[in-house]
Amino acid sequence: MSLSPKTVSALKAIVFVLALVPLARLAAGALFFPDWLGANPAEFITRSTGDWTLRFLLATLAVTPLRKVFGWHWLLRFRRMLGLYAFFYAVVHLSSYVSFDHVFELAEILADIVKRPFITVGFTALVLMIPLAVTSTDGMVRRIGAKRWLSLHRLVYIIAPLGVLHFWWMVKKDVTEPAIYAAVLAMLLGYRLVAKLTGRRRGGRLPRGTAAEPRPNA
Amino acid sequence: MLVRRPSDIPPSEITPRRFYERRRELMKFAAAGSILGAAGVLARGTHAQEKTLGLPKLENVAKSSLSTKEPLTAYKHVTSYNNYYEFGTEKEAPEVYAKRLKVRPWSVVVDGEVAKPRTFAIEDLLKFPLEERIYRLRCVEAWSMVIPWVGFELNRIAGFVEPTARAKFVEFVSAHQPETMPGVRLPVLEWPYTEALRIDEAMHPLTLLAVGLYGEALPNQNGAPLRLVVPWKYGFKSGKSIVRIRFVEKQPKTAWERANPHEYGFYSNVNPSVDHPRWSQKRERRIPEFFARRETVLFNGYGDQVAGLYAGMDLKKFF
Image (cartoon, rainbow over all chains, first blue to last red; front, side):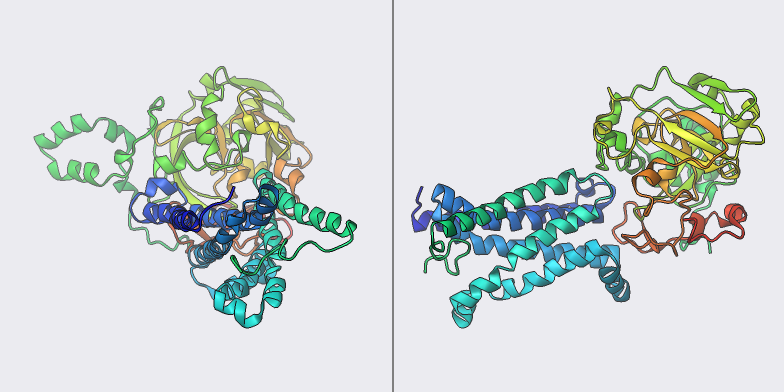
């Protein structure tokens, strides 16, 4: 399935708006419709933005396998936006924790990050996302060079597992939901591993840009 | 310091249910003469505006001086944000699934180290003189509510069964209904859910067997038809839908202790200076507020009544 550049641009606009719906729902709930967020609205916002961070991370990681398996190469045009939305929701998630849970008590937050493993890994994942967000522009790709850009952006292979681990360690007892995210992540990373191994067995590396590609239409 | 919030709402401002239910008569009465007094009761009562599930009303409920003066958590929040893992681990699950819970016929077996073991039908327990107790509830997850429970002191049961000298602890067994409880299919905890108290904790006047809230029968998601309420301990110590109360000699292992002894101790007294390994217990969020800005108080503010139970004990060790 191939799509015309025009169609892709239109689709991108639609995805851009749709990706803001979860945030809009939270904002509307917080400001006007308290029933939408239930008895513990702060927890609802923190959980929901955390969920959406993981979903966007997984969506970002799904681009390459879907391209390879189904030949949907136009999906690559969405990857940067999906990645930036993952970062965006992660920042809202952190802000919610910093403000609602810790009422901006910095010393307490730092103690939390050091003392509590699930916070430590979540915070690490977020920090690791910063360089990727910063270098997401075309100009930055040119400036640092495609090759280095590519290796830098392989950080996502650390970020996503840390994100899922953060969720896994956070739940009190029932790990069903984090297990679902972990399974999807394992599939997406497993695909890459298998592709790499089988590629090697055939006596060569995969064609350039299989695992990650620096620029959409380069 | 009991709580940060000043006692700006005296108990007299919370409209007693019996006045609320007779508001029309009271109106006439007010019209007849004491307009000011009646208007005050009707206009400012928080109880009065609550929309409830309309469960059977509990009659002849006495007030208690042990009630807090703090503003009540809305009925809809008390009944829609619950930890009742037998119906699922999501807070919203009990409201949806606990409708299926079979609460009649119901009886409570009281046995173990007692002279006269006995099985109480729920109908008999409902005949006990009932009191309203407005208690703070502090969950181990760092949120809290203020709930107007209706019930009677657990120590009333002891009078009937006569615990022996060997009764050092009391174990509480919750209902296990696989046919109505979707959550028990998963081995999240060992079922049935069990909890336990030391005998002096169990016999303390603050320890309540609740059969209702907001003047009505207990909603299923809150642990119908009767549950324990131990206001100075984290919420999970207060077992729901109790079917058996067992007086025992040895300290029982509770469901949460078995699941994770590192995080959940036998005592689990509310204590801001003993953190949960994964989060701080210093502050709490009063439902439905956004900011977790309330300082958590040792024994959930009931220190005057219960601190004596733990004299000389290292509360960090016996958490």
